Image 1 (cartoon, rainbow, N blue to C red):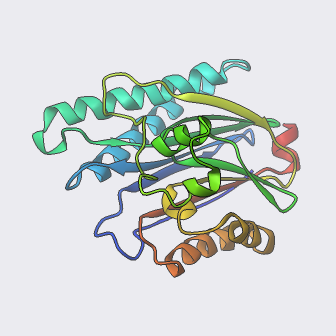
Image 2 (cartoon, one colour; image 1 turned 180 degrees about the horizontal axis):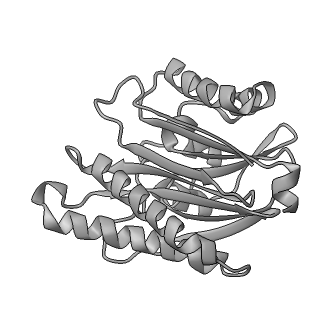
Length: 248
């Protein structure tokens, strides 16, 4: 497995409230996490930082003992723990009250990627030149799409597009959503915040991932978002599966 990631403040914001973590393990597996903070002043930055630190510590402690078949419970617990850590921090300091963060976590083991998320940060699978979204946004606009009230095309320009319905740290409990997918040699997983997907079209992302090496592609994705105005913080994290990893 190969990893490449970058976060950028964008062209408009005064602070970068995105955060990410990732690690490749000696057995060829790996994990990744992307968070997009929300909250006044420095609240969003603090929330995403706490969530990332929480998940990173949990991975270091518990991942070595993880047994096959336990991935779902493992990832759900990781995000529930992060939720508790962010919520408790928001209760201790008045200026951080109400802060929260999205989170999308991926665990790549063998030929399967296990995903768990809260909010609208996403994971995509890029294969054969095609980009497919694996996660389902927890957002007001996604609910409108699901109910048939608006079309996916209308959702792209909806005025309430950024209203999320689930986040880490806002309440004392949260319900992360789990999914999984099979991966093969050469597949690329893209974990990202909406600062990328709101600014860069699916076709453009596919073009970049088709034409650039992994490490170059991360920079190209960030550059493309900034070239489109960079209205928000931008984070892109790429994981590429290889033969040894997917068969190991």
